[in-house]
Structures are given as C-alpha cells and as structure tokens.
Length: 208
Image (cartoon, rainbow, N blue to C red):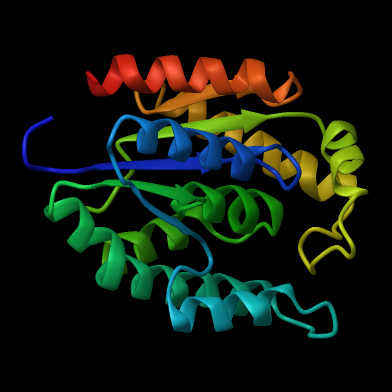
C-alpha cells in the first residue's frame, strides 16, 4: 500500500444500507489491527455537523442551489481538516458519502448542472478522490421499508419515489463511467451477505 493512505467511500440512496456496511468494514479492519478514520458527509467536523443539521431541517425551505453550496461548504472543511491529512499520513479513511452523492442527489435528483458541480469539485476539492467506492444499489421500495423504523425522516429523505429513482439512476451512471473505482453491491440482499462481499473485495483489493 506504500505510505499513501486509502480513501474509501460508501454510497447509495437513503435506506440502502451504506452506513451499516461502513461500520461493519470498520470493525473488520479494527480486528486486523488497523484503525481507520471514520467520517461522514455532510458532517465529520464541528462546522459540518451544523451544516448537516440545517440540511436535515424539514421546516427550512432550502433552494437546490443553496443546498448544493451547503454540501460543498461541509465537504471543503472535511477534506482540508480531516481527509487530506489522514491520507497523507498513510491512514485508511472510510467516508459515508462524498462527491458521488452530490452528483446523484443534486445533479440527477435536483436537476442542477453537472458541469457546475464538476467545476466546484475541481475548484474546492481538487485531487482528493475516493480510491474505491462501494455503491449499495437497492430499490426505492426496499429502502423505504427499512426507513420505516426511523423516528422521523429528514428533509431529503422525505422526497418522493420519482426523486429517488433519478438519484438511483445517477449512481448507476457513475458506476458505469468508473467501473474500476465503483463496486456495485446489491443493497437488497441480507446484510451479512453484502458484508462478506465487501470485506472480501476490500481485503483482496487493498492487499491485506
């Protein structure tokens, strides 16, 4: 692996199981004596967590373009204060969502310019890109069944099926365009089955 660290992201629509799978891989690596940096988007820093609270508030009428810039403000803070330093120190970083989520949710879901999103990424994120991404792909119906156990849906989580179908298409398009980076997993399968696939793939890919 060398001195440079690894940046691993987990993506998928809300309810796809991405957060669960990140936690399981985190546990696997801890058992191997590796302590990864575990973080999330939006969030991961004091500023990012405040931005996350704003974005989750269903009482706020947030314009799509404002939403996009809020996500980027959280991302820049996270990259510069946590992700980039950790990678440069040779650590493994596990992140719950990153730039792919912006393309899928704000680009495909909200209909914002993907060229503009790419420009913002070049300007403010630069060369920090995931080395490997696990995309938990599942249907809207499956995701919603899982979400029923949550006390209350956040602002974006409460969007309708049409929105999430567009987001899912966005994720699939990203996977098709970058097959060497994005590993698609059937998020509708049992948690333990998906976990084994991700664990085996990661250990083989990373050379552990």
